[in-house]
Image (cartoon, rainbow, N blue to C red):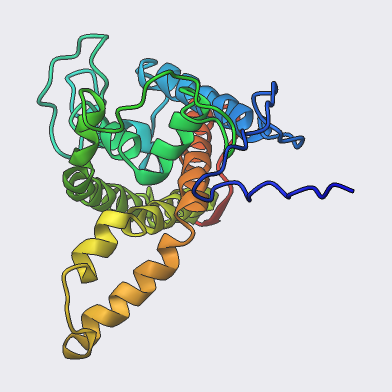
Amino acid sequence: MTTRTAPPPAGLPGSVRKRAAIAAKTLRTDRWWFAPLITVIGLGAWVTYATVRVFMHDHYWVEEFHYLTPFYSPCVTERCIPEAAHFGRVLPGWWFIPDAALTLPFLLLFRLTCYYYRKAYYRSFWLSPPACAVPDGHKTYTGETRFPLLGQNLHRYTFYAAVVISLINSWDVVLSFRSPEGFGFGLGNLVLLGNVVMLWAYTISCHSCRHIIGGRLKHFSKHPVRYRIWTFISTLNVRHMQLAWITLGTLALTDFYVMALSAEWFDDLRFIN
């Protein structure tokens, strides 16, 4: 009678067991591809819409109620309607220059370098990797150590620009409460105000803002005010992904509403004046 000796457990010294030969690229059976696909469709549709609107150079201002779409704020080219150019017209009116050329590049960089958006387009457009436990679409991986991904470190600086732009958008909302009879209030005001509130929520929920407020503090007990602010921002930071998508929606909705009013597709619903 012979006895069999059990093979040593895999991973122990002296083990000669080989890994299982699995031909499949991944053993995941769920729809792991669905999230990257939806991201491609969502971001692709938004970028297409925004690009078309930015270079339309029309239907961005409702003079009667002082509604200015955020896609054209601040309007600074010579092409801008004088009443909509709250900060002057300082750039030439060539067709390839966006009317908000002083702010759009910074907004684009702020979104591109955002920690959530990096994850979104790395996984969806670059397949790096498309999902957990799914092979990377590239043979090599260098992280964010080379150009152009080295520029992701600019995020902390573009945050300051985003704060300034949010202030400008807030001023646009204040001006929108003017009507031919003085103070006015309508559905357009609610749309503009809701968009600005969401933009502020997304901006201050940024990881850079959270670090600026409390990242370098060693003793929260010595800074109770900053601790309370840091706690609030941390609560928003948990929802940074949702806010990123919500603000894409509110931006498109606000722009479309202002465009529709400017093009006289329908009238604004007015509550006061």
